[in-house]
Every structure is written in structure tokens, then in C-alpha cells.
Length: 72
Image 1: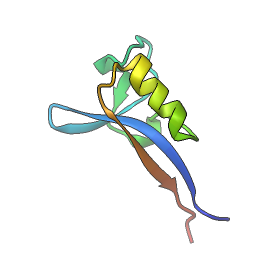
Image 2: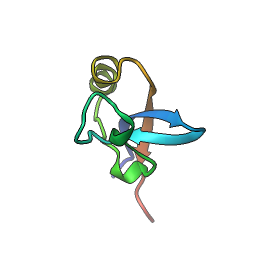
Image 3: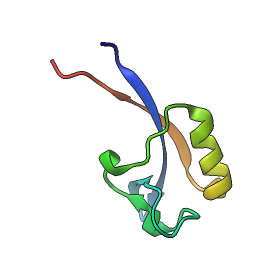
Image 4: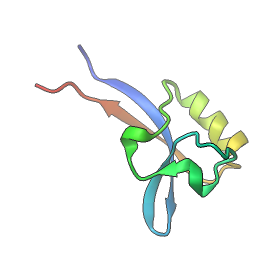
């Protein structure tokens, strides 16, 4: 099985990296972010992540590719 990519929306809050987690409030408030990438909302294409960044988060953050890697 090969490695698979996913994309997340991330931003810095008080100099710490946080990931968007589609929280209860919406509109990318601070309550919608988590410091744990495991809890982040993962997108399987960059276009979907970009749409969330632009339309829900007002462009505040960035879209970054990550990979699932298989444990040996």
C-alpha cells in the first residue's frame, strides 16, 4: 500500500500551530481549531481545503499537504 496524501487548513494562534477541525461555531473561530493533527478535518483534495480556507475562514491560514504513512 502506498502513502496517501491529505490536506488540512492550519494557522498559528499565539505562536502555536493549530489545525481546523470543523467545530461547532463555524466560520473558523478559535474554537474550531485544535493543536492535534489527528483531530483535524482532513481533505482528500487540495481544492476542497482551499474552498474552506477561502469561504469559511476568510483566507486566514494556509492549506498544507500531509501524508498517511504505513507503519512497518
